[in-house]
Each structure stands twice: as structure tokens, then as C-alpha cells.
Amino acid sequence: MSLYLRNARFIDWQTLKIRSTHIKVDEGASGGISFMDTLGDMGGDDRVIDCKGQFVTKAFGCGHHHIYSTLARGMPAPRKIPTNFQEILTYIWWHVDKCLDKDMIEASALASALYCAKNGITFIIDHHASPFHIEGSLATIAGAFDKVGVSHLLCYELSDRDGSEISEAGLVEHENFLSGGGQGHVGLHASFTVGDDLLGKAVELARKHGTGLHVHVAEDKADQVACLKDHNKRVVKRLFDAGGLDMPQTILGHCIHLDDEEKEIIRSTGAWVVQNTESNLNNNVGLANYTQISEKIMLGTDGMHCDMLRSAKAAFLSGQPVEGLGMDTTYTRFRNVHRFIESGGFKGDTDNNLVILDYDTPTELTDENFIGHFIYGLNSSHVQTVVAQGKVIVEDRVLKTADETEILSYARQQGDRLWDKMK
Image 1 (cartoon, helix red, strand yellow):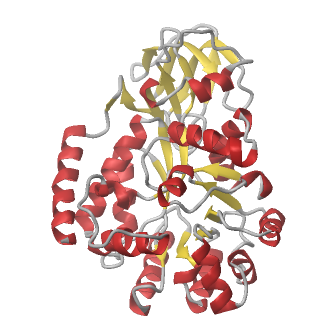
Image 2 (cartoon, rainbow, N blue to C red):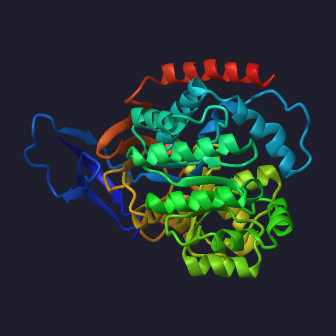
Image 3 (cartoon, rainbow, N blue to C red):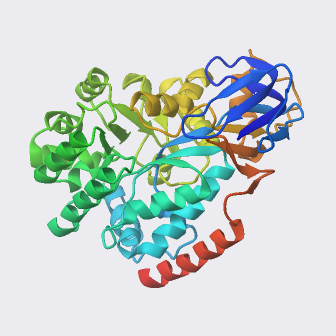
């Protein structure tokens, strides 16, 4: 079966060239697209959507997400108001993740996938934590994402903060998920909660499965302070010495507080860095000059929301005073997630992932000025229809693969359970 997009204005995501055309979209994990001057004969199972001159371009990807934060929106205040980043972790996020069970995880994943899909995101790289419900958690998330129709790259957040039994359970969860055909990384929280034994086992496991690490790096100065105290080296050097940067699929999250040697190590190894501007602002941990770190920078949300267009605008506005960030470089970082997925050999981000944009611009959009529209005009409200691997998953801003009302009702039910448990 093929999908045909009639009367589209197609924006090539790499060249930014715009062409008026009809588009044939093949279904499946290896499907592609082709352009047609006229629509010929179609099979009985084929479908045509008339774009009526709307813009069509490649769908979006999220380079770093935390679906487990979905049910935190509006939650009760912590028992102590945090005064620094470590207290934010202790009194908010580590309190949340300890309370999660299977139903809460499933509800979080379904709701997050729903929001991502409606915002044009068809590929999610997630970093999960639920220390008292680890077994099967990655499969639960994968199942929820598959139900909505978004592709994924998953991992569990390994840490020694809850004891060796739980850290071992996290290793087993990775082994079971990856050996069972799941697509993922081996996840680590941050250096200051990961001992040498666990780090070594994580690197070994990632090598075994031909993937990389997905780890929080120097999000706060405390991560560096602890690493120097406990290991007599800085965080990136520690990861490098352990072999964690030897794998081209490795993702380093945040990377706010790095010195020149660490930046050089990252450039020399080719590891990818993911920028999460709004989360860093929210946690008051600072902003980084990513231009000094690497060209391999992509954007994430860090669980703050499910809107990559919003993340791009935040990266641009905050990046101007910090690193003189330009609109073109912002767009490159927004799209680098596709380059990461392809270079890492991961599946699910082929050309048949598309968004149809109902972009009601008051000025002309051309090849030459697209970047200006991307920064100052386009937002998630313009995402009208979303195609994932050749299948329509959102049409006229309504999810077609599952019942939105049921998903959000389930999420509210599980959110109430989570909040009661947190008391």
C-alpha cells in the first residue's frame, strides 16, 4: 500500500529547496518517497491526501527525552524546597522515579508518545528510570510507543544510588531488552552516582550489543567536584578512560561544565552531545558554548515537554549571548538527530516520516528565507498531519492510531496514583 500526497510544497530538510509536487510515500521500516509530476493509476488500497499547497517536510526527532516525567505536571510540592541541583534530584526526580510502577510507566509513555506525535516527532531517544520497577520497563515503553506509531531508541538509567541489587537489575534489563531485539543504548545517570564496577559493566554491555552509552555529563558542577574527589579526574576523562567514548553511538547529555581538555576529548572521539536548554534554565545549572565542544550537537527536551520546535527556539534565543548562535546552526542542531540515527545504524527514521504543515504565514516562504520562518514562524500548532514510516498516525491534528481520550484518561488516573504514592 502507498500513500500519495497531492499538491504538496515539499521542503528538502537538508538543502531547504522547495518544490511543488505530488509525493508517493511507501509504507514500512525501509520505505521511501518519490516525486511525481502527475498522479497515475493507483491500487485499491492506496490513499490520497490533498495537501492543497501546504508544506511537507521530514518529521522531527527528539535526541534526549524522559517519558517518566510526564505525570509530574502539576504534582504536589516536594517535602523540602530544593536549593541546588542535587536537592532537585533528591527531593523531586528521585522521589518520582522510586514511585513508578508498570501502569504509571505505560501511561507516561502513551501520553508522551501522543504529545510527541501531534508535535511532529516520529523518533524518540528516551532515558528511563524506575528503580523499583525495572524488569520489563523498556518493553513497556516500547509497546506504548509502537501503539502510537513512533520509533524509538531506549535505555534504562543505571545508577548505584539505590544499591547494587538495583544496579544489577538495570544491567539485566538492558541485556534482556537488547538481546530480545530492542533498539537502544546502555543508559547511565551521571558519573557521581555510578561506581567504577557499574561503569565498566555498562561499557562492556554496550560493546556486546553494538551500541553506545547514553549518559548525563557535567549537567551541574557537582558532577565534576565528585569525580575529581572520588576518581582524581574529570567526568569526560573518566568516561574516555573507561572506553565509553570509543563507540560512535554514545550520547553525552548536557555537557554544561567542561574544561578545554574535555572538549578536545569529545571532538577527537566523535561522541554526540545533546543540548537541553530549557531544562538547564529550569534547573539553574548554566548554559554551555556548544560551538566550542563539537559539531555533533543535537537537541532534546530532557522531559520538559514534547515539542522540538520549541526546543530549537529556546536553543537559538539562549545561544545568541552565550555562543553567538546563528539561525542556520540552530536548524542544523535541530536536524542532527537524523544524522545521529543514520550514522549509528539505527532504524525507524527513513524518508517516509513526514509532517504536513498548515503554516498560515503572512509572508512568502522561499528557499532563501526558510530559516527565518523556522525560527520566528513555525511552531507545533502548524503540525496538521504526521506520517510515520509511511502510515498516517496524526490527521487533521487528531491521533489516528489510538484513542486520545482513553490515553489521557489513563494518564490522569495513573497520575493520581503516583501523587498519592509520593505522599
